[in-house]
Image 1: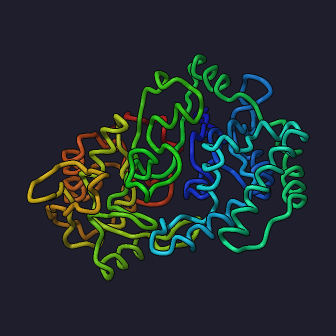
Image 2: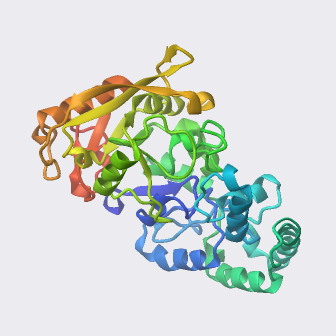
Image 3: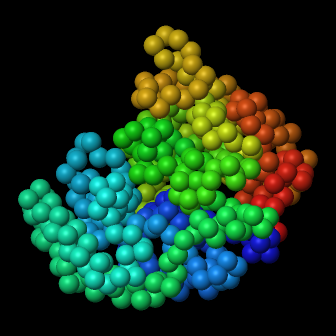
Length: 397
């Protein structure tokens, strides 16, 4: 990405997101809570080409803006809440993202800017630790936590990060006015959105294109492309409705082929057929201009591939995923012939098997959005352009 001068600006998600393991991290509007994670971010910044906080130019530095720094033991509270919820558990990663957002919306969160003022930081931290200890002792019957230990850990991390805290929105807008490419990077799927998703089985932030503007402080009018990413099949981690989910034996087969295990927790992902109604709703919510379909090669060995085209609900038919009624949706399918030959060495669209191209054409037709790229492997070179010249700036090779 550096060779193309693409500046990443992460607009939402925390270190629980799988993409946090794989791509450079522009920290804007993110939730962080682990002092060790802060240290790793500081050490890692030298290998990233990100926005600088000190002057409106580009350098190898990391910018923390509006990033929540949860002061209470977020991971502990997250785990205890899941255990306490029992059958009503959501299936979180246990990385403390929910408690971080609880602090934010209660207007009690400690923000990155608070790390610049030791006295103000300590005052807020002491208040939040007291609130956390009340929950730990009274509700969860657990041991209280030490203010001194948490303060020491966070303040040590803050020394390394203080100079990296600044107003990122102005810097990003300056880059945009200078006609630089800025890639706003989000995480999780549209239907894990806190407002539009399969509530309560959702994450704690806005995962749609709208979240890019909210998370960075940049006007949405600057956004000229909205690229959605979907696998050639469907996966989900944790609890919640999943209309096209496969039966256990079939799901296990697909899971092994696709190595579908969470990068953060290692949990097995639930697997199912491509859900066109769900992706169609995502196209509408985000006004997507293009799609990237990943992991097409995972389907190489299938004789027959099903696609969820819509749903049956209460005796009637609906075409688009309805998050409010998701648990009641019965999927409708079409079946297509598989290609039964490897695609992982294909580098041009015309090199793909005819049946694979027909599959992609059908997906475009069903979701109402053009496919710009399809990936046939984990290497960057395995991103095959479907429409030559379309979104070429995304390619890193």
